[in-house]
Length: 108
Image (cartoon, rainbow, N blue to C red; front, side, top):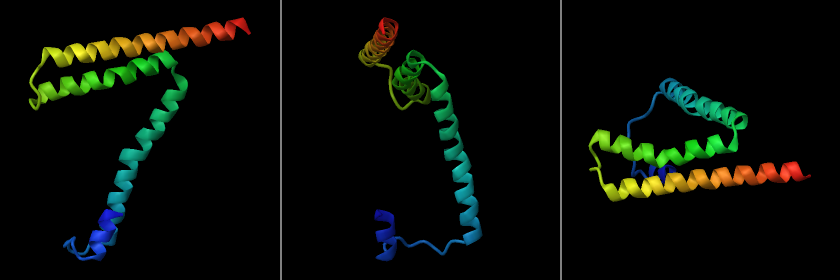
């Protein structure tokens, strides 16, 4: 909405865009974004709750590690400790939730 408003007001001074090139960009964007999202949705439906929670809990840890490798963030023991506490807590919560749902299914 903001970009369209800026274009209509003349604040976005770009040259005209070739419609054929625009179509190619949209198709590439569709392949790059829509297909991985579809594949992720299919994979999520095939995995256990515990596995999904473990992968999700690893996200912040991997972001921190990649930022260290890239050089944007310096290593900080406090940050790593916080990430490890978060990861362990997320895994314990997922494990407890999975055990709780299994116990309810067995009692019925």
